[in-house]
Amino acid sequence: MAEKAQTNPPAPGDNRPSLSLHVPEPKFRPGDAADFSHIDIGEAGKQPRPDETCDPSEMRDLAYGLIRVLGDDNRAHGPWDPKLDAETLRNMLRHFATVRAFDERMFRGQRQGKTSFYMKCTGEEATSIATSMALASDDMVFPSYRQQGVLIVRGYPMIEMINQIYSNKGDKLKGRQLPIMYSSREHSFFTISGNLATQTPQAVGWAMASAIKGDSRIAATWVGEGSTAEGDFHSACTFATVYNAPVILNVINNQWAISSFSGFAGAERTTFAARALGYGLAGLRVDGNDPLACYAAEQWAANRARANAGPTLIEFFTYRAEGHSTSDDPSGYRSATEREEWPLGDPVNRLKNHLIELGEWDEDRQAAMDLEAAETVKKTTKEAEANGILGHGLHHPFRTMFEDVFEELPWHLKEQAEQAVHERKTKFPNGLPNEGKGA
Ligand SMILES: Cc1ncc(C[n+]2csc(CCOP(=O)(O)OP(=O)(O)O)c2C)c(N)n1
Ligand SMILES: [Mg+2]
Image (tube, rainbow, N blue to C red; front, side, top):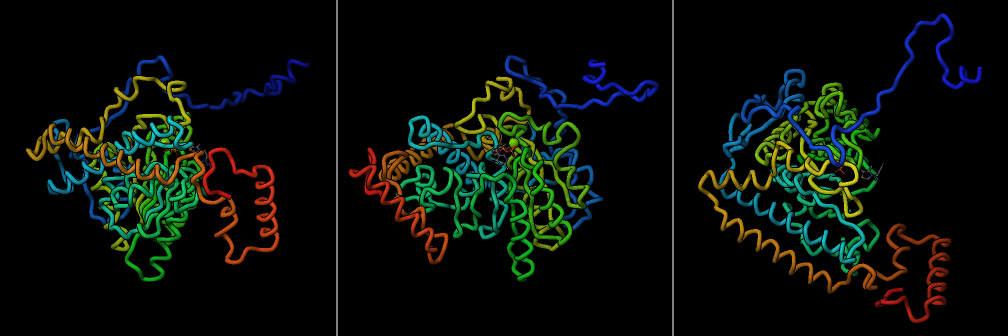
């Protein structure tokens, strides 16, 4: 009897099969040899490019295939070739070099204790740099935390980024945001939130407001594939399609959400681009490591939005080449050979090789560009360090944590502020160790 109660089998005479649950498991774990031969990456240049105003039902296959422009021969192929001139391609390559150098230095800075946290975008650079180059500089962007490339493209001063990462006295956000959660109204860059996917309905709402006002600016948002499992993302898709909002929903499928593989967000069942179909949205699936394909897809979606032809959901299929953040060690949960076996290569090398193939670039110029990028980042880091680094006390004064929320501070917060400052002075009459002019 006791056993029966524990296993809860079907009642006697009931021949219905017992139900079972599927729990996704990644294909490879540490120690396994990764093998991506099951992934059909298709051929560059083979995907059709429909008119930007076409009905989503006419472009169904584009949600399941992979739009690719750069072939193994390093040449651009097919109707999605954005036909960018060499100067623009070199400019894109320079942004790549800058972001890579920046990521390297900030990661090292975290290890040296200059900041508490950093996140790299290694391998995914094209999904923010090439895409944002295809937008107008005043289109409103609602990024996630791995789109530092957008700020670099928009010319946001690098020192402001580092001041924010160091939470120092130059930090315009006054240390109130986690490092890398930038914000710049002047660069039409919405404040990054750590609460995953909240930016997606915000982007759609902004796009709706832009249309209501009769403005010409569109909105674009970036969200990780893992975050598409959040309810916010689905609300965003519903509002976008219902009101035909001028918005682009960029889904960055880097196949991992910290240590959870993309299967937990639905990747075993269908593509992320295919989600678009259920909502009646235009859906594109793109080789996210192909800078030309990324540019072309974003440009297509921007043209569509500007023509009031509707929103687009774009899945960029890519791979998170490094750890999730400085707090993560991927060797604990995924195969070490995934990065080298990943079939879509490295976006920086692919663009570089394309320019070399065109006779517009060479390895010496690349080495000089990489060096210059590293020097610029180093110099700017030194400048930012003069404003303080983590724990050196050169942060915004302690009491400022009570400011900037209310136009006039309510009495109870005034009391709390006074009490907090008083207690701090009592406890640390000479200031905190290493503290500058705080409190
Ligand atoms: C609502 C919410 N849930 C969980 C977290 C913790 N968290 C931070 S990043 C992350 C993984 C997100 O993965 P993905 O959306 O694929 O983006 P990626 O990091 O790969 O760029 C999680 C679970 C969070 N910040 N917010
Ligand atoms: Mg991810």
